[in-house]
Length: 424
Ligand code: GDP
Ligand code: IMO
Ligand code: MG
Image (cartoon, rainbow, N blue to C red; front, side, top):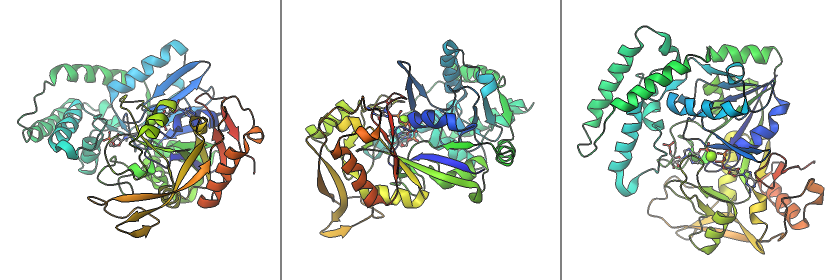
């Protein structure tokens, strides 16, 4: 069997959590391969909304295993909080969840470094979620990091102390940054003890044995392609590879074992945090999308920047990921629009661009739009795409023609059931 991948094609928050939960019954294992608690993946069913940060979005389904891969960074405190929230739902997470011994740990001092670094950047700040993601991946690539497998070692405390010492000396670069680590450290160490109650595995063997045994596996991306460390709008990105290739390194899956790549995007576009966003609407239309789409961060609560769909950015993301099918999310958010718009290319200094140029600092990127007739009716109660209004069907066909990949799912609400299959 091959490993299917589901990932975001925009700047995150496309609705990955919802769609992974919808697809989970078709799989035996759901595996996260990168990112950490900067992610906020929302699932909704039976009138209850759940937000997951580190735990894969297959956790609510029976008979499915969930794997936190080696490419993920784990904050034990946030992780415990997530597990605690599962308790009232009687989810047997100890039986359904395994974590990679090679996943790196986010220390309280990583979070301090994240905060100090962001504060020092002033108006150039990345708009990080401040979960310590950047500093943790820096220690990983700098070969200083602590991993889940280390927590069982008798030297763990010594390794921890040595890394914290290094962080303290780094924090001296920020003389105005005040901190007190002691309380956070105590909570963190207690959370490490609870982490030991879960099963830590050699995840690359776990996943490859599962592939050999014919198990169906879905890799769940976090963030989105435009936040990828290599291919996103650098430096306004996250610190991991959010693209399909990240599955290979973040789980130990060989490229020849990758199957379907499902790219997901909103019927419009959002971004949270700083950085370029050519189709951003800073007017009442953007405000309206934010309101109708309830566009506020699932992790930080920050209002998301909103704008029209950006076809050049989507084409780029499809190319980098090799997306073989697409899911279009939040179509219902545009239900009350007489007309909508799609950006087909950009103009920069009077020149046409069909892709995002290397550096847009100080440049005015002018999006060029095509106007599209809105469907202007309620889609949230549809149970079949066949019954969708013609204008929505036309929008889907228009995007399929532009993107050259089939849109197999159209989502019309946050609930599991509000998901339409577009049969081709
Ligand atoms: P993720 O990070 O990609 O999992 O996405 P988030 O959970 O951060 O943000 C997506 C938000 O949109 C969540 O609040 C979802 O409940 C919601 N959502 C997902 N799909 C739909 C949809 O089709 N329509 C509407 N209105 N909301 C949706
Ligand atoms: P999900 O998985 C949207 C953004 C932050 C910031 C930048 C770097 O829910 O789609 P970081 O905390 O990684 O240092 O922040 O990336 N960002 C996200 N935006 N959705 C996410 O995850 C994000 N994770 C990080 O806002 O601009
Ligand atoms: Mg999110």
